[in-house]
Length: 478
Image (cartoon, rainbow, N blue to C red; front, side, top):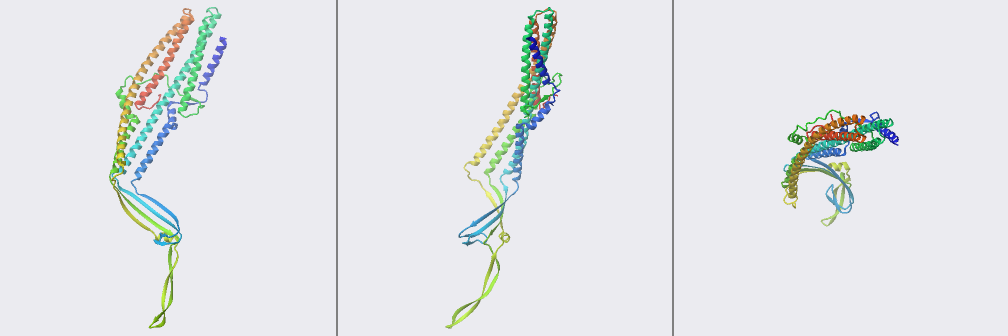
């Protein structure tokens, strides 16, 4: 029965070894590649870039408001009954078709600095959007690094579980040979069989953990779940960090200057202050200059095409005697006036200066000023809240990194001590000085110390990366 279990276990270990082997054609991703891929594909970052584009558009719109506007319009009409012909301004009772064309231009000459302040505000909003996008990129980089380290942690646990199980099997075969030789009692296999069963469960558990951790990273990078990915591992050299020598003031000062989110919040305050000035400008008069160029056409429009010259006889009495008086007559000859001619002949233009003086606007201006003031206060509170949050996060990050450093050093010492104890127990077991229970217990303590060291190592590595994050350093494992 146990031989079948061992054979099945060996098959599983071989499958896992092949599954995790770099021989399989897979892309090898380092942390930088993962972060760069997230920068290009993460939806939050893409939305941040869209916000930058929107800020750019708003800035262009504000800048263009300095210049005159120019608009063209045209209209077509069909009129019936008595109405005014737009080409000669006379009443007619005929149906006619008309067409009007106009160009209009307008420019603001004075509006109490509203345009200038709006342009300044749009420039600040543009800069704030850039900093907000950079903060999103840094946040995503830290999340990717955490997911990346989770995979390395899971893979190291799996590697350790496979190595332990291989040693379990070797020990089982060795004890089985000693039993057959009559050196050991048969019941000593029971503890080893239980240890092999636990090892088999641990291997399968760690395999699933690796798969889930990789799936989480692929979801974060928007990769297909079936995409095969292998991560580059950092060197086995000791992890270096200055968390034990750096001070809170050093980290917090660096964080204030390196965290784009703080800078974006401070710019939002400046934007809100300009918003107050913009709202206040509605209290004062504004001056604008406008001009219009227009012309008309009517299908009833006529032009002079010559004269008909003739005479007219009239019978009159002169001294009681009937007589005929002939008088010359002249009548105008009218013809349809072409469209182009009417457009040219009916051109009119004019300019006007307009002044708008606000007197009473149903509290709208005052309400706008109050909203702008409250927005400034809210933005200032947001800056203070972010700084307080940053201070808390920096304190926590430094404390965590320092605690993780001590835990990592203690875990290494514990592992080294347990390894020495296990080597001694192995010699004693081979000499028959201890039983299998004590030997298996010594091995379990070593296994626990190995797992504790792995946990402490990656916990310390991630906590050190968090300190680097607040120091404004690139997130890298090199």
